[in-house]
Length: 111
Image (cartoon, rainbow, N blue to C red; front, side, top):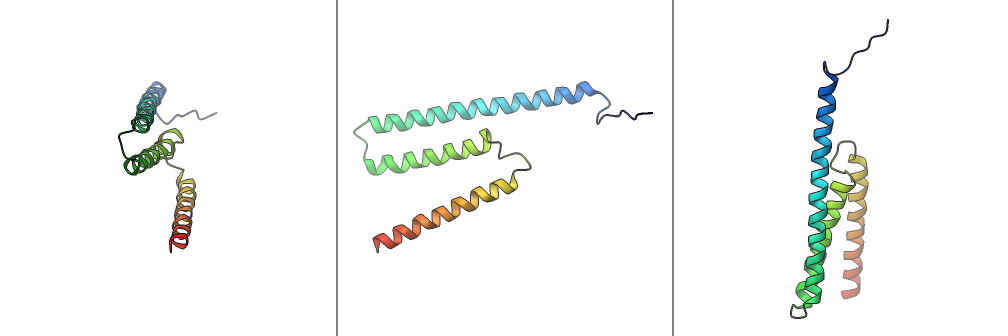
């Protein structure tokens, strides 16, 4: 006698829940993608306008780039899901080492 039990009394309920979760995930990805396109258009427009100072444009473009990297990691590479803690640790450790290295080289060059 095989014991054929499922996690739910109604298998259609589990399927409906997964469909709802997938639809929600897709909605977040489409919204994030459209925001990234908007940020890119803002960056292009700022560079195309020659009236804005370079000292303002460069930090804003870098900030938009950081926001896009965060969107890429959390929404398109699914870093917000459970089970990605080790990978996130390695990524953040690498970013920290890279940032410290850049700061050390800037300090050495400018002093």
